[in-house]
Image 1: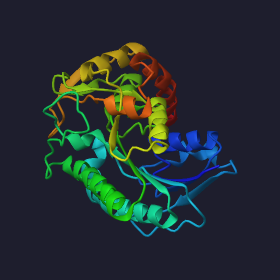
Image 2: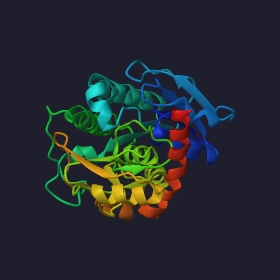
Image 3: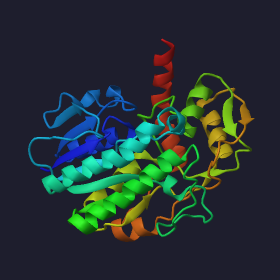
Length: 315
């Protein structure tokens, strides 16, 4: 049995990771200040003996009694709606939170895994994006608080790896979806599901020709689990290389829900990426990983969750 700490473990991806490690027979400690994480995501875990929840802001000193085998740093607001609402918190958790989490891993002699993001590539000039691409990011734009926080976190992680000898792993996460997402987080799939289920117009930015690559959460969790147990310290892209336009995703969700919603177009947000598609050659080579859930299947598996969330909000 391993003992694993997950910062941001009450968030969307963190909660799925918590279940995966518990199901593997590991002990899981979740740290979350519930700024954007939700107790509802992990309330089914509270009765499990191997699960511990600590409400804590990881930008402050972290004390966890006992040994740790791994620290997974997933704490951070991550949706576009948060970039303007929580800019300082995003910068602090990327900088101070990463520093505190790395310090904990160093002290415990634990392996450290950083949740980074495809946003490190910004509005890319190459497609698909390989890990060797340094990105095209506007550091002072609205999205810059998230992009640069994660880029700084990667730099600090590699510094701890090189200078202190900490065993580190970095995952660059591309668009991921599934049960457990905040319905109001401003991302494409939660927005489209809630709008379609409420019979509202689906709000598509621009013409909707910009592309995204959507990965079902179970595929992502499998990749992260493999990366943590690998010997590869460099950043690794995890995402689904099937590229869809935003308008395609909107139409799929309208058809899936049987909604009479129409598609409306609004202005593009600043620095909105025109393309987003991972080159997963490294993940295939180093982890033997590639996604297995097709977008149509994943969206169908996600629908019941959003149906329940919409009913709850209207009750």
